[in-house]
Image (cartoon, rainbow, N blue to C red):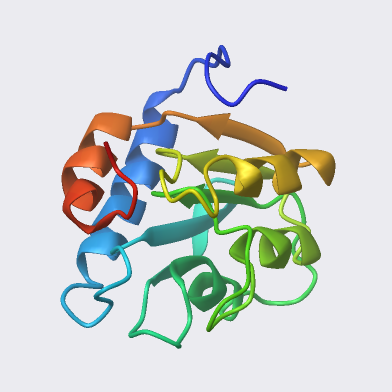
Length: 154
């Protein structure tokens, strides 16, 4: 499946939830540095059930912080993430694999991660697990917030 060029019409509700994820990401600064200030919101049946932002290095990324807040038994969850979930493990586990393990059904990603260690690999992990993924929701706002902090950004 292509990483870009996916045709998906986002509705106003999607924009609101990604806007909340962007606001979460802004809360990460400055303690998340040198990691990018990523935000995540998880939605169940139209309501936010968890949210998170990148913590200081070695601590939870946005997705892990949000997933840690989830109550058991929720299904059909949608995650809104401002930057492609990481595919690799470093000081923290892979966020893409954590989303798969949590049973997330749909992930909206604002922008792909230009870091060559990721660069689409996180999206592929999600898609191979059967998770519906859309890329590009509020991408201009995400790029504005994240660009100064991204490694490998053009």
